[in-house]
Image 1: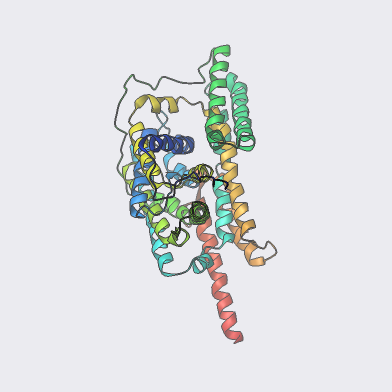
Image 2 (image 1 turned 30 degrees about the horizontal axis):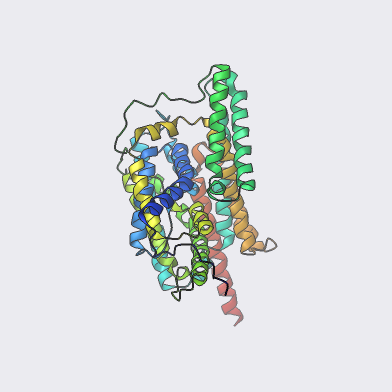
Length: 452
C-alpha cells in the first residue's frame, strides 16, 4: 500500500517548535521590511519608530481579533500622499520631518483608525453588499488610481533630487537599474523566499551600484554620516498634535483601503481552509466572516501606530503571499515576528543603514510600487465588472480622477483653494465621489418609488 504523503504546513492555531518559530518569523520580517521602511523614508517619519510601531500594531491586531486572523500589519502606501501633504510643509532635517508635523499627521492617522473601527462595527450588523452601495468599486477603484498617480512626481524627484547637478546622470542610471532589477526579480524569480523579496533584491542591486559608481566618480551617493557610533537606543516617540487639516487629508483614505483589507481576508480564508482540507482536519476556519473584526483590528492598529509616531498601515499582501507559498499560517509565527521587529527597531546601526539608501534607489523602487498602486485601482474595477458605458459610473470616476490628480499637481502640497479653505486633493476627491454616488442612489430611489 502506497504511503500517503505528509502535508507540511501550519494552520492559524498551530505552533512550530522554537527554532522553526524564529526562522519563520524572520522570513515574515524580511518580506515586510522594505515596504514598511520605504513608507517612513518617503513620509519623513522616523524609521526606528515606524518599525517598532509595525510590530506593536501587529500584536494588538492579533490580540484584538482573538488570534483568529493571521495577518501582519505594515505601513500602507495608500496614505503616503496624504501624510506627505502634512509632513512636507517645511524642509526636513536628517531625513525626517519635525516632531510637530509628524504629530499633526499622527492626529489624522488616529482618527482614520476610527473610520475603520466604525465600518467594522457596521459590517458586524449589516452585509458587505450594503456597504458596497455606499462605497462601490466605481469609487474605491479610482481612489486607488489617484493615490498611486499622485505620488508619481515623488518617485521621479527622488531620482533627480541629488545635491550635485553634475552627478544627476549617474543618479538616473542608479534609478533605472534599480527599477529594472526590481521588476525583473518580481516577474522571473518565483520560487521560495527569493520570490517574495523582489523589492529588497532590487534595493540591494541599486545600493551596490551606488557604492560602485560612488567609488568610480569619487562621490558619496551612499551617505553614512548619520551613524553616530551608538549601538542601542529607544525609538524616537512623538505625541499627536491636534490638526483638523491633517484629519481632512488623512482620515478619508481609510475608506479607500477597506476593499484591500476585504480582499486580503477572503484570500486568506481560501488558503487556510484549503490547507485544513489537505491535512484532513474537520475544523472550519471561518475567516471570511470575520470582516468586521478585521476592520476593527486595522483601526486599532492605526490608532496604536499613530499614538507613538508611526504611519498608518494595512494588512500586508507580501506576508499573505509568503504564508500561502510556505503553507505557514501560524498566528504564533506572526506574533514572534512582531516581537523580533520591535527589538530590531532599537538597534541604531540598522536605522543608519536605512537612511544611507540613496534617493535614486528609493526613486527607482517607487516608480514601480506607486504605479502598481494605481494599477490595482484598475484591477478593482475590472474584477467588480464596473461598466464604463454607464453615465453614472463615468461621472463618479471622472470627478474622482480629475479632482484627485488635478488637485495634486495644480496646487502646492496638493491643497485645493476652495471656498476660502485649503482642501486636500485626495480627500476632496473621495468626498466628491462618495457624495455624487449617494445623490444617484437617492434619485434612483425616488424615481423607483414614483413609478410604483
